[in-house]
Image (tube, rainbow, N blue to C red):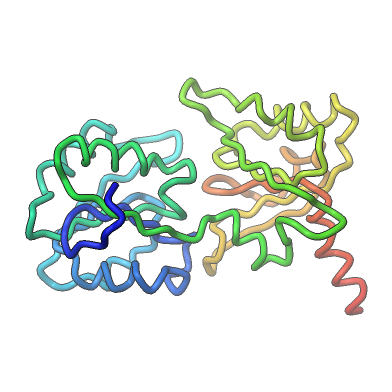
Length: 249
């Protein structure tokens, strides 16, 4: 990908975790001059209202565990709409390069001779901070593991078993169907007591959140009526929110 900023081409862009005000300024300006937007299921529709009237809006979303637009179809649409004098935005929720397949699409476009650009987005895991949970904190968490709960073959990443052997905060994307398995892994390591949080629809008015022990993830989600899309955060940093509330009271 060329470092030089160009006026036209394909823009692989992150739409942030949900709240439209969390989009980057560069992203906002790009949407204002878009000719075509290929947008995902998880983006806030208010972002589409930033586009000019002539902009063509094309939905290419994927419902979690449901209907989806095949990746080959998305590639073909990129090839179809991209042109030397067009601004084509591939708008994705969160950040395109964090379990978003954004780099796959960028590589495809470059193979087709299409000029490409990457605009980062705030990832949904950063919404933890908006809920009083820092992902790292001196003396509590020295590192951060970001793990997929659903690999290409549908399985939970084996990296989780490595992560629990450290003091790292663990963030799991696309793991809501693996809550029981995640809990079992922590329990088998004698870590079922570790604090955990699930945040659904992060940063949006209808956000839901539960705090529990890792061993209780599945039951807590049921009791709180949480489903996907959601992120799972496991680590001692989750308990910092409660400590802060106790000090305030």
